[in-house]
Amino acid sequence: MLFNSSQFIFIFLPVVFFGYFFFVNKRLVLVSKTWLVGASLVFYSWWNPVYLPLILSSMLVNYSLGASLGKDRARILGDSASSVGSARKRLLVSGLVFNLGLLGYFKYTDFFIENFNGIFGADIPLQHIALPLAISFFTFQQIAYLVDSYRGETQEYDFLNYALFVTFFPQLIAGPIVHHKEMMPQFASRWHLVKRYRNIAMGLFIFTLGLFKKVVIADTFADWANEGFDESNYLSFFEAWSTSLSYTFQLYFDFSGYTDMAIGAALLFNIRLPINFNSPYKAHDIQDFWRRWHMTLSRFLRDYIYIPLGGNRVGRYRVNINLFITFLLGGLWHGASWMFVIWGAAHGAALVIHRVWQQLGFRMWSVLAWCCTFLFVNTTWIFFRATDMAAATKVLEGLVRIEDITRTDVGVIPTTALAWGGLLIDRLGFLPDLFIPTLPAFAAILLGFAIIGQRNSISYLDETLTIKHMVFAAILFVIAVLTMLGSTSEVFLYFNF
Image 1 (cartoon, rainbow, N blue to C red):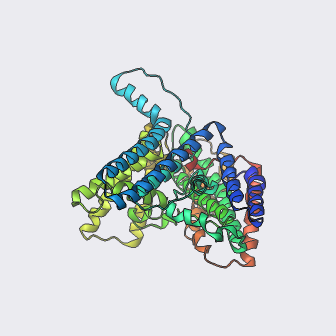
Image 2 (tube, rainbow, N blue to C red; image 1 turned 180 degrees about the vertical axis):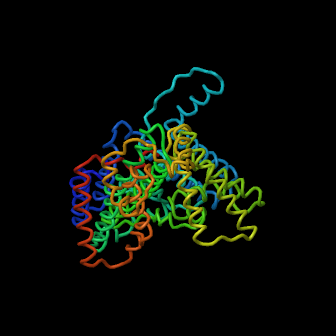
Image 3 (spheres, rainbow, N blue to C red; image 1 turned 90 degrees about the vertical axis):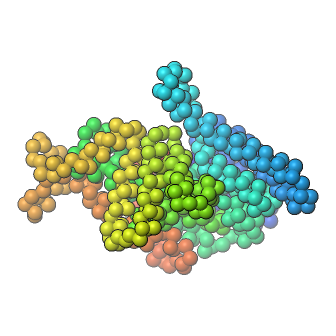
């Protein structure tokens, strides 16, 4: 089920909200939590109920392993038995094998078969396994829980709270990758069981901002991005830039919109999700970008891959290798494609270069630093979006096709493009012919730059909303719903991961 669907907005969310607080008001705490878990499982299985047993079995196995690791930790503290420590390591390893095995089977089987066939000339048939929704997110979540249980950093939780931690529908499908220590105490708190009207108002406000970003802004940019990546065989200079920038802004507003909607929906139930998106296109270096983009993924990569590899505790050379490996794996996490591997490798290399740059004491003007960071991110998103190297090359070649800037032998220009460009041609007296068809996209891109320069929606979380805020949100909600009902909205991009 999509957040940006009439079923979710007008049926699912109101029914779950009122049903939950109905049970809360009756002091039926277990029933209210069970209701929320059941609703979350309905939300998950709405897309394809076939994979409901997968998430249920994953929860049962991981909860059992985590509980056993916690009990064995207590035994070690009391008995100092080395045999118990070995057993705990075996439990942890078996848990990691189970989780990574599930992820590998469903997400990477065909990828490995395809590459094996290519390398060794084999003819193993592809399995065409459908990717279960959210498997990357709930797998990473539970891996973190197992590792922390092994380290003795978890408390003993009942299965109902654990199930709510894994399945809570606002964060289930596309993150954030929540951590048990920031979610479990909220589910156990009595404040979770009180109808707090400030949270409801703020939740609706933030949710509406996200809905508008998604269905009005991101889906508009999607039209130009899809046309350039999927439909055109050749891109001129202006078409390539409008295509790449359109996808850059589509992904930004799609992810930002989803994050806002997740935070807003969770607030209705007095749950505050971790911040996962904080104006990343304002970053002045690639390290700052990753402190702002998909922040919970960056945290997971740091805590459970980079630091175990040695982190900053090893020599400079090893630190750089660790950084590169971490983001190479981070790229592969996004999908079973060499395009994601290239994207992850590019960001890993950029972080290494940035680290060396800092160590050498070099500095860059603020504006130039922002331009370099944004252009790098925009260019690497091409690999993130392209289905193969040919599609990526098509866009990259267009970006440097500067001879198109003054071309006039382009034949007939579409009437709609002339309508957009005619006024500028009359006023300025000159405009490259190839630029005219891309005028709508570039006008939207300029507006996109203006919007990302404003304050982030999460900055409102600790403020008191006024009537102006609510009227503004109501206007955005009406526009978003009319847009949503009048066209087919794109699936959230991170649903694919």
